[in-house]
Image (cartoon, rainbow, N blue to C red; front, side, top):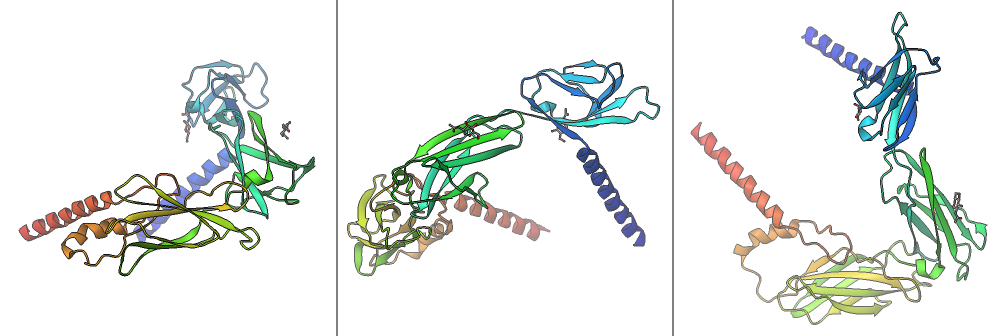
Length: 360
Ligand SMILES: *[C@@H]1O[C@H](CO)[C@@H](O)[C@H](O)[C@H]1NC(C)=O
Ligand SMILES: *[C@@H]1O[C@H](CO)[C@@H](O)[C@H](O)[C@H]1NC(C)=O
């Protein structure tokens, strides 16, 4: 027993040592960046031009197309497969000592970032977010500058979303636009996007929350829908919202719409008897800005006199318990069929296991 424990400890210890050694050796390496498609030359330390060296990548021979000249290794037209830890060893050196170590990272300079700014917390402030349309494969930083009436405003980075920042409105109902300049920077280059935003056009609330749709007893064509204003909207009293409700039976593609001002409930009175409905809401400032995205879809069926016979509920239960996590979008997804299939598959496995057991 002791032996097993000891050897187990040794294995763990050895693994830790190996990992540590790898870390150490990579930490000592300097990083060299190269653009995809370019030739890149790596220099072994500060050795003289007549020094003779051997190069390794990731501890094995370099196989890529290359030119070697004294202490220099030139890789031709590098691509992502050229990435790696390159080490050079001086040949005449009696102990074959390593002279240098370079981590080669191949990538691209950034293109202009795509920027959008939006105020979901009007009149407090707005946020801007950005992303690159094409990957750079190497670390890329972003510099953000926001100007209003020729003054730079304080820009606060979001703590969760890496590519987002927050800005407070310095004044309300300003006729000056906000100039937002986002610059993407990495070791291979930089690119900026500068855009102007009007205060009023940036306003776009988050979708309404806690949307609930209920049947109304004894009313076969009615559904009662209630919701809350978006919790991010700071001052619903001074900056009231209006709402847009859309609903349709699952079996039809066409939505029906109702616009509602300043109310957080509505009763649908023209539902089809016994049909399951899908319901969503959007919000907008009464005066300015654009409509929010759609809220998460909720489902409801009007009250019916006769409860459905039990025999058909088996499948329905599976469908209904699948969470409707569809994001707010024009076409909410309806999931469920898969769940039924895998449950069947599962029970057939159980059956098989039972048969096998009974044979044994
Ligand atoms: C070196 O190793 C890294 C990962 O450990 C791998 O992505 C890369 O392709 C390797 N480089 C070469 C040239 O084999
Ligand atoms: C945006 O910012 C970058 C970096 O600070 C600067 O070089 C560039 O001139 C700015 N562009 C505009 C249009 O202001």
